[in-house]
Amino acid sequence: MTPGAGRRARGAEVRRAATLAGALAFVIAAISGCGPRDVQTPAALVGDWPGALSWRGESTPAELEISGEGDSLHVLVSFAALGVRALDAGRLAFEPPSVRFTIPDSGGTIAFGGWLRRGVLAGALTAPATGSERNRARLPLLVVARRAPTHALPWPAAAGVGAAPATAPAPERSLGAWMRARAAR
Image (cartoon, rainbow, N blue to C red; front, side, top):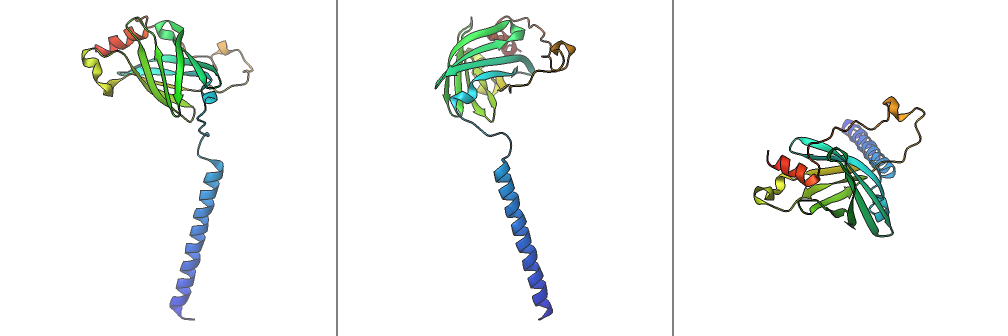
């Protein structure tokens, strides 16, 4: 056997081992998945969705409560700092992954358009356009994540561990007023 043939044989063995290692890594990744499974059914939306409404460097706590039977979904919206609790937003339209609903407000209807992906619901709120509010690049962003069912804590929630963060009241008393105040800045 020539000296070059030995090097070629060892190189082939190294390439074969690398290929097998790569294939094994691919199979392990495919079997285990990369994060939570993405479920795109109406039943995947049912539950409590805490999160935040953010716009122009400020945010306020937000929560959606989605209920339903079959393909018919209903949503209640809460913005605790704005004094809005369990506001009936009506029917939720779900065409995977797209999610849409409207929120009634004193200044007109506010629409939500977003998407559902791996247990996170994110999208933008739009109010009736007036003048400079037509700039779609600066819309309020609502991001909520599905609250996973948890086991009861072995200590009282008032102890500070596991308790909800304190919510400071906002000077505005409606979502529309909150959006208008930030648009003016």
